[in-house]
Image (tube, rainbow, N blue to C red; front, side):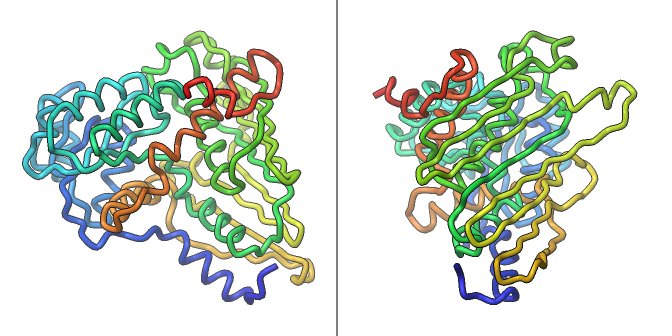
Length: 379
């Protein structure tokens, strides 16, 4: 257990929720895609912190022009290749549907000697195999790849990681995440045949890896979401899963995108809450995202053996959407400056993709599956 005082711990928590920024913020960023994540989250965060988006393209030029005007982006381009060839572009920000990522990144890399790095949305492709293909393509081209696992930069998620790093809670015993939310599914998801595990649960699976390390195995159970089933066929609407980690650590998540008939007339009970219990203390928190566009900060409370039954509740004003979206790009730019691998590199993201695929296999075959079982098939 740490010997820091509560004031020292709280100061460390508040410092940890602000990701380091690069010294040089003038590297030109080229934007591929102009949907919600790019227009309402990433570009908002980039402008808040003085980063330099200089070119953008989208499936429709009118959309790209509208977003460019909103965020003062100088150049609207007609293709991926034109963005990469822009004389100021060094970093590519790819925010397209997962089934389009391989083609977009392949086209970008085909323009020789232009890019230093790519930030790609999660999920990195539609499967572990496709993610591995993208990672290898970028490595072969000498281009640094990072993945926008942006929940790692949610303020309460980062603060909880600091509690674990400082051993405030002792050794972890049990971690849980419970989501009761009704996401806005994008139209492109209808052609995927899947919903929650690769789009929503991937946040929670990656967060549990961020907190606890690599799980040995996962057991998952899924069922269709009645509301979404009216729109398109899928299997993984409501997703429940249990993770087993080394050292007898356990974790679970309930990802409920039905959440009752709240849109059909019943009262609503929506939200995301998490909890970690350790040998010396426990922490609990909420994720403010379901309230978007209302600015609702995520929260954290913690208590230890020495706290006489009291909770400590550090607070902050920043929110996941859009404030935390500076985190992935800032981490990529800092890694380039420091000549190191990003903590969210494509290679380091592969275990998250393997874990997602393991959930699908577990649900289909009704057995526990190791993420290594997925990864070893591609050795």
